[in-house]
Amino acid sequence: MPSPVKLPTSTSVETLPLINQPDPTQLDNIKAQLDLVLLGLEALAGIGSEAMLQAASDLKLEALVADRVALWRLRQSSPLRKGQGGRKKLDVEEARALVLISCHLAKQQAEKIRRAVALLEQMAEQHREPHQTALLGDYLDRFNNMYQERMEEGENVPPTVLANLALKLLIDLLFYSAANGSRRLWLALMERSKDGSS
Image 1 (cartoon, rainbow, N blue to C red):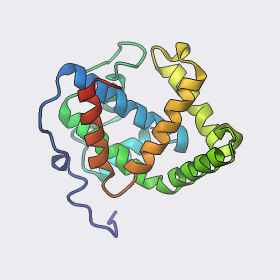
Image 2 (image 1 turned 60 degrees about the horizontal axis):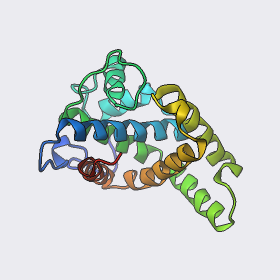
Image 3 (image 1 turned 45 degrees about the vertical axis):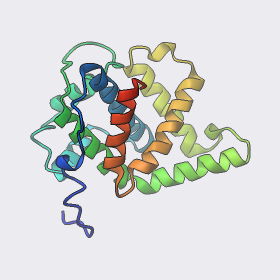
Image 4 (image 1 turned 90 degrees about the vertical axis):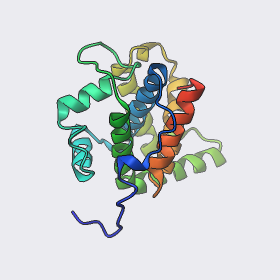
């Protein structure tokens, strides 16, 4: 599918700089963050594994994300996830591939992301709760349910903490849907993993 905008540089794994090789703890933080970004997209736009695999194909990343099983294993590598089955170590190239896939999907959903963030700002100005709008209410419910189903500590995280995480991810997605989103996400992951914050 030819795109009207040529993006040869921004969709290449090599465009994501790597100053130092992340250590295992940093990679764990990166895996957790990437899985949460994809969870945010799933909750907001109903994106599933088919769309993620299609994005991998569009970006010519099939060698790194070949099929549903490969994708599932990459997602399961997040230290926040329930269960050990099929868990694998995520290497830097796979992390970069997931960054490109996440941002490709965020660009596709840019209009919905912008609408959700605009609603969030509107609710804040009116001193109303975000869940009082249909779009944000549905997003928060789905995010909450998915997090509780899939994450090890899901049942123990207070709803307000999950809501704050979901809304922070929504604002992050706005930045990741921009033209330089993949670079921005990669640099944020590098920075957060260095700080040891997730």
